[in-house]
Length: 203
Image (cartoon, rainbow, N blue to C red; front, side, top):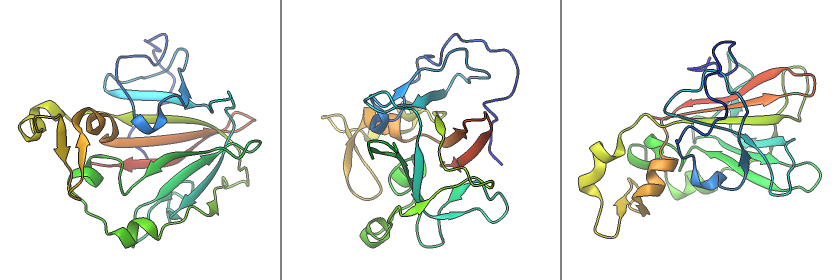
């Protein structure tokens, strides 16, 4: 499961993950670069999650369910998309890392969700790996393969805003950053095991 395996051995290429791709606005100031990333794609933004106080170990709370076949993956329910929150255990700081109702191309331009669908999701399930581990370092990748300038430039108003499917207006530059077409979240345990926790095609 998952479009890409970012941990495959191979040519490291770049020295860090700073390849010029700008990532989601909601993670500004909450990530750090990865040194010598392997198989970093030209349209991929990849970072390690980090709190404002420097912590890099997290538990995960979520709304949704585990995939029936790939039971390590968080997915949405038949009623609504998933909602995933990272929690720093010591301080209790919570960081939203994915909301399927508002993040990604489809949520912005294709799939409209009601207020009830959005509000009736509570991230109250605690994620555990299949062997019971619940604390991880988190690596997040978003893929930005959509040419927004080509597809939507004529829809941007004179103030630089574009209307989404729900009728709200958002700055076009914000849409480019949060309207990614694919998301992957990997957790690394203390013993070095790597678990794919989220893998969503969003366009």
